[in-house]
Structure formats: structure tokens, C-alpha cells
Length: 623
Image 1 (cartoon, one colour):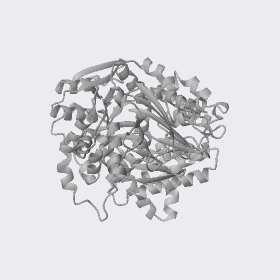
Image 2 (cartoon, rainbow, N blue to C red):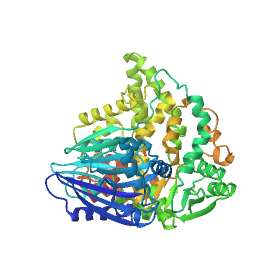
Image 3 (cartoon, rainbow, N blue to C red):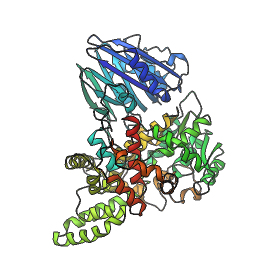
Image 4 (tube, rainbow, N blue to C red):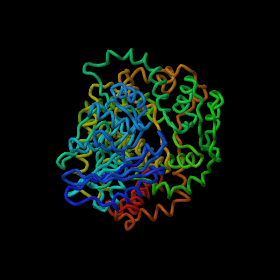
């Protein structure tokens, strides 16, 4: 796991100072080693920079940028290739020889042998840039699920890329201005949805895509995409997919243990992390488990994590933290945000404590909810779709009074505001309505720019997502949308920059590509049947989890923001949401203060004023 940066200059040269500054900006992602290189491309210069978190092949032979002596190709790579040893064996059988034991060198040899076809053979999480010296082109490649980030920007004389938005911004070559579409996206969802970022002119390379820079023009094409169903209904392979799940689950988890340093498991005591432990023990691996233990009883999940640790005889470690520790960490967590987000502080805290305890690599259960229908949205959204369809059939003379009566109550809570939009015949799909932070009316009140144009672009993007799911059943449609939207743009992105702020690598076995493809071939009704949550996952573990774990109410790792905003943080947030403090954030004067007042009156949840506070803080630090 690392940080990468590159700059192609078509007319001016690349300065070493620019590369050194990029290294400084990315040191937190790779504190073990760093390197730079400047390549003469014939029509300009390509500068590459890399910071390394040493996980596989800890020797200097894993240093990057790494050159292929046979071709002159060069790579800077962020991520892990879990099947690199299998690929290496195939390549050695074909006559390739290796100098190191790193997965980075395997990518170079695979590209030399198979060309672009090699990218679909890679199993893991990755974002890398590869300079093809023979063809004179630069390739940017990102993993299928978008686990690792990769951003780019183009100016008149430069093409730049990096692992973080702030690294590109800090070059001084990109104007420090908010992207209108990115800002509107943040108001809608609490995070900016790709390909936009919060900064105008900086974009994300799409997951499962490669981007080639030839003649100064970037061209993008896909090598993988989320399965979107088969025309005509359920896949004929659904029964085979269910039968394959136990072996696929085992293979996904065990493959993610490849490492030259110890690998731990973040154990919360929920179904997801407990399943990882159960699979490892069944495969004969005794994991080291790490649990965050709060001194305050209302946050403490120690009894559940201890139960799993005892049942499966793990090498268990508890990391003690208090509410005061969490509150004191907020300023640093906010500074670690590569883009503003309403989530992620909990990941920052867990990662900080785990890294301080000596953990360098950890498995997490992220992705299990999306693949095995673990959210309440998997029941709620199909119901909302049916309700929306029934409302659409009502005559306007009937529908309008219903919507009006609900609208009268809509100002008293976030849920009622969303229900009012649904009853009024909103064109927003129920998934995006349920996941929205501010509703369409609230966004118009907040946004200083052309809200009609911004809303139109947002609606078009949402419709494109929904159109891609036309062949999926209602449950798998939610799975697709959760994976492509909330998981990719909030959970995965936050997990990346909040963990890498401490030089900690998080791995997500439930997002193994083969497992993801199989889950989408299983009919949705098989995922939600049974009394237990994630029953399909539980049935295929081949080992029984304790009833106390399976039947406990779903509880994420949450912090008491509601109370903090009304007590310890009240004055700070109140001051930040004043008009003068929000001048950088592109919002209408007075609108943030109104959101704050609604929160104080109990008419909106803490996440709304918190999102505006995070936006203000991010702008103040970075703009």
C-alpha cells in the first residue's frame, strides 16, 4: 500500500522540486521508503513519485518507481495483488525471470507478456501508472471495485495524477476552486460521487478502467464492470453460484492474507468481522484479532468481540479508548480528509489506535452488507418502489391532496420530508431518496449556484445508475446501487484515506472480484429469506456463529455526534456555520444557519449541520 504521483509536461520540463513536494504530501501513505524518477518521453518529460508502505518483499528490491530492464517500462503502484505468486509461476514457466519477490515486478512482467489483457488477471486492490516505453504512452489502471483511489487533472501543458486530491491541489498547477457539480453532489449524499471531485478540474479514474495518455489526450476504456444481470430474468447459473459460495468465501479470505508482515482482523463482534474469523479458523489459521474497547458502556462492544475471540481461540488484543479520546481526535481526523465527507471519523480513530498498537495490515468486513443484503435498505427500497409505482397510477386530483397533507408535516423531520417528496411523485428513484442527505428542496435552498442545472445533472447521473440495473431483481438492484454509489464513494474512499493517514493497510475480502460476481448471480430473494440478517452468508460459513452475535441488533461503530453538537462542539460549529465563515463553501448566505437552527429544534438530524461544518473546515484548510 503506497502513494503515487505523476506529472507529464509536454512543453516545460518536470522539476525535482515538484516530485519532492508530492512525496512530502504522500509520506503518510508510505512511510517506509520513497523514490522519484524523470523520464524523457521524446515529446516531453514524465515525472513519477512513490511513497512505500512495505508489505510484500520488504527488501530494497521492492523500491519504486520500478523499471523493467527488458523493455524500459516503468511503474508506480499502490495496492496489493493477492494472486501475484500464481501469476509469477505462469510467467516463469513462459521464460520470465525475476529479481525481486514483489507483486510490483509481477505487474511489469505480466504487461510485458500479455499486454492490457494482464489487467483483468490481477486479483486484488490496485491503482497504478505504467509507462510503456515502446509505445510511448502512459497507462493509469484502477481496480474493479474502486478500492484504491486514483485522480487526474489536465492543464494546457500538464497531465497529472495522484492517490489523493490534495496532492494534485498542492502542486499549484490546479486552481483552488470548488467544483459546482461536486459541491451539489456532496449536499445530496454527504460525499462527492465520482467521477467528480470537490475540486474543479480534478476527476477520478473510474473503477475497472484503464486510461491511456497518447498524444496528450486521455482515453478511457473498461476492463471490468459490476454485473448488471441477464436479459430475461434470473441467471441459469444461480444454483451453481450458491453451491460455490463456501469455497469462494474461504478462498477470498485466505487469499487476502498474503503478506510478509503479520495480518490482523478488526473484530467488532458483528456478523461480518466474526465471519472472517470463522473462515480463517476453519482453514487452520489462527488470526490476531483487534477490537476497540470503549471505557463508556454505551459504546462498548467488548462482550461480543470477546465471545468470538474465545469461541475461535484467536490471539486477541483490546485497544482501550475513551469518549474524550475520540472527541480530542476530531481536529486531526478532519485534517486527514482528502475530500469532505460526513463519515470516516470512526475509521480514523480505529486506524490510529490499531497502528499505534503495532498493526500494519488488517482485514475488515466492509462489503458484506452490500453483497449479502445486510442493510435495512434491502427491505425498504423495494417497498418504496412499489409505493411509488402505486402513487404514480393515482389521478392527480387524488395524489396532489395526499402530497400536500404530507408536505404540511414534512418540515418536522428528515424522514417526513423524504416521504413528502415520494408522495409528490418525485422523479428521484427511492434508493437515492433514501440515501439523500439534503432533499431536492433543501439543496436548492442551500446552493448558491445554478441549482436547476446542478439538479438536472444529478438526476441524469442517478437515472443512468438505475438504468444499468434494469435486468436485476429488486434486491440485487439495491446491491448494485449500494456498491456503485454509497460503498464506492463513501465507505471505500473514507476507509482508504482515514487508514492511510496512519500508514495502515485495510483489506476487504468480501469485495474479492470472484465473490462479487457470484453474489450478483444469486437471486435476491435467496439473500433476504430467513429470520437472520445476512442469512445467505451465515448458511455458507460452514460453521455456526453464536446466537448472541447473529441475533443482536445491527450496530455500526458510532460516535455520539448528536450529543457533542449540543454540548462540547456547539459553540465551534455554531461559529463555523455563520455566513462569513462559510464564504468559501459556495452556499447561500443564511442557509447554513437555518440548518443549524432546525437541528437545535430537533427538526433535522445531526448529520446535516455536521456535513456543513465538515465542508467549511475542509475549505478553510485547503482553499
